[in-house]
Image 1 (cartoon, rainbow, N blue to C red):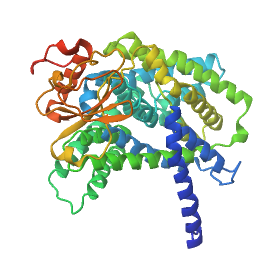
Image 2 (cartoon, one colour):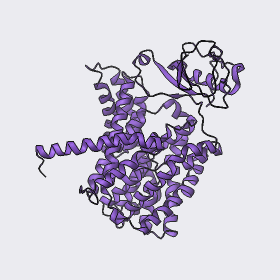
Image 3 (cartoon, rainbow, N blue to C red):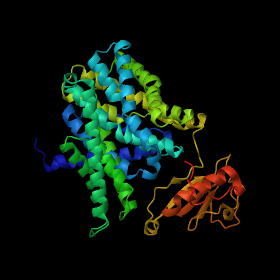
Image 4 (spheres, helix red, strand yellow):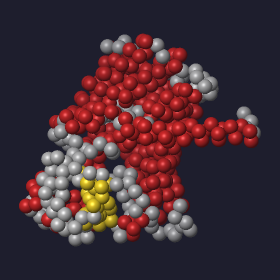
Length: 503
């Protein structure tokens, strides 16, 4: 196909208009509590042959573009994930990504075969493609819900790691080689690729961090490009070595994002922007691949039944089994069972059997597409309500603010935001009575929509939002002190430096 200047001009016109509409849709979807993937999928469907008329039926190209977009999304997820928060729940996150995935695949496959009447191959494929949670959906939705750190971090770790084993398994099933091996051998293949991917990601992350601290690039704008390139280098290296590229890129991003590198804030912002662009492109492509004319009442019925099986049976069982390695309170496990957000990843995985020509692959693609849309609409907006009902929502939980803060970077400090909940005993405490560690201070109080520069005698009230500046070396002590006063009031005992803050 020959592309001339006129075709380029038309592509730029349409592409920029679609991109601008997609960016504006982010605000609409975030206010509704929905992952923006739904809007992007709809845009892709509208652009397709059934409506505007853009032809697109190349499943192999869709798979290639989707894998590239997922690699960038996972890199951004790693770069913006705090290792300090993830480390305490890493066992649970890995267990959800491996043991939980196996349990979920088994439950869905057995149910789909015996209850829904699907052939074994399609039933196992359905279980495999629906088991992983979606990193883009999890990162975009859960980071705005005020959850305990261990809950959100475990779910983020799961979504970062569970793509790897499922991609390998779906590929083995689609090419027809999974039946040639004993299940134990298949498990070893999947585990081996995951371990190799993690090892390559660690090497790329630590090696890249060492390099970035020692090179002096001529302009600050090159540092974000270099960091993202290093993470993607991990993906490519692992894939060439027959390891898991998705595990490698997430781990490399996690190491780089938690290293002391130049222009960290600019790097995070750049990665976030590129990840949004990748999400938009990914979901639009998947929407283009759908032919609405193929969607029948039978497809919708199967999708609803499979979604109920996954949401109400497979997910809770997989979370319960995974939690055996790291027990957590029942109400938090219940929330994690409901918060297993499926997004683009299940749809992307269906492009593998579609491109391999597996019998019934089109039916599987349509079924999964409908299931993802319906259950994302149901699940995502309900998360804040479910968190409150299960009593896992914590409005007074200190959390990072996303902003450009060059002065904070120079002094290695962080800016925290705290909302004083109706039950917090911070109410009535004076700022001077907080007794924060040296160097930490309450810089601003937001009260009833107005800003207030606090003095030591300023009394805090329910509903106040505090902006607290804290050096990174005393951040844990600062957060621990704020939680302690929130629970015990002004007479709460001061934590000694050798005490471990409560998680």
